[in-house]
Length: 570
Image (cartoon, rainbow, N blue to C red; front, side, top):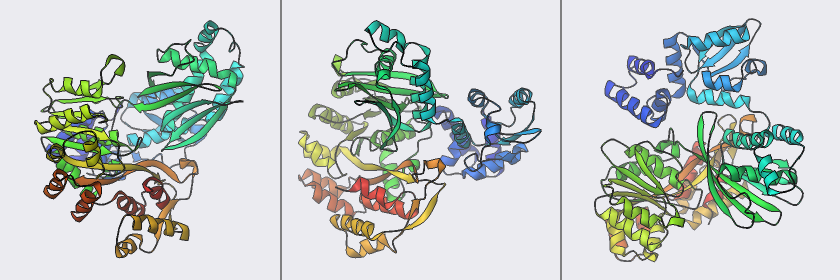
């Protein structure tokens, strides 16, 4: 049982962290987004996580604990199962002779305390833990995937794998294969993987996870396992079991540790068998804010200003996997009130947002972006999101919608913000229409964050300094500004620890380039200016290049110079 919002509200008002109007608005937003109020006030910047944790704990007469900062005893953790921990939102982290120290999201849950006490035969000492810290505690239940999967493989012993399709289909629905598939997905969720690859090779099958944009080999399976594992995926995503020559696409919905996930499945035939790639999509974009994405300073101000305008177009641009759609979802979440009608046409629908009417593209029945957008215009919309502008028809419909009183959000593939303007023109949109409709362009990349647990100061190596100086010079920055940005060469790195898998990096954050379409930029666009001319004028008006935003984040210790160079090199 979660901690009631009324208690958090009382604490916030008592210590004058918010006023009554603010807290009521926050409660409404928390309920709509399905996030705890204690987490939302932190993400909105009203209070820090340690401070709200201490205040709530004090109000409840217990001690606060941050499970990411304490060593969880294995003996304590094993006193209850992971399932019970999730159901009761309780993590045992310390055990002595007669007492069990337990972190709880709601220390007032006497039924949970009594249940655990009776089950363990120990006196329960409750502590308050923030929901985000509780999630860190759940990770302690994770076992090594290699050991778990190899154990399942041995149990199965590759029986009934070879033979007719009927036998493979039958084997794919038996418990060992179901457990194998579920474990692969569960550990992907635990590791925050964006993609799962099941890749057949000559003598083995590799299971790989893409974590923070990088692919990692996780486990090797015998080749005999591949047919039944692929069959299991096909069964769950309603694909043809006996089709092995053609690519197939599908979707699987499932729940992992109270988390609703959707797997977007792609299966292709390869020389050694069928390869499966599953894109892992959270079905709820909880806790998304512009500041969490990495927007700050003038970039944040310009985005905040653009989304308050009643009509026009906001474009997010960058390569595949740069976080464009997440940025647009975050903006939609901000705009999602009872006063507006929001409609989207997407491919795929990545997050389910309450009160937003989301439509999935389906080319097989000619439901394209253009066809979906035309249909949405008959739905009395105020705000529309088009998953991607990729052709002339979609571009012209979206531009005209932005000109006729609608706020339109979309993505486009270009390398930088200024390049999106000639890209639209290349699609056949008249320059004067682009100038009249586009309000803002957000170009972005994702960089890996330095692990908070093992961050340390670092000095630029001569090689890094040379590479950085070269990239900055290519951006036509003055030598004075380059020296100012590089400074004394002091930056940060992660030393590597257990929490980041010894990589020194954990999680991702965006680096941005925000082009505001000002009156002077409008004149340039209408005059058929080049991307370079538009960028030059935007820089005069305060736009920062993406590499500059990345450099500032590296100076602050959010990421490393190597990461910034990795994603911004041309």
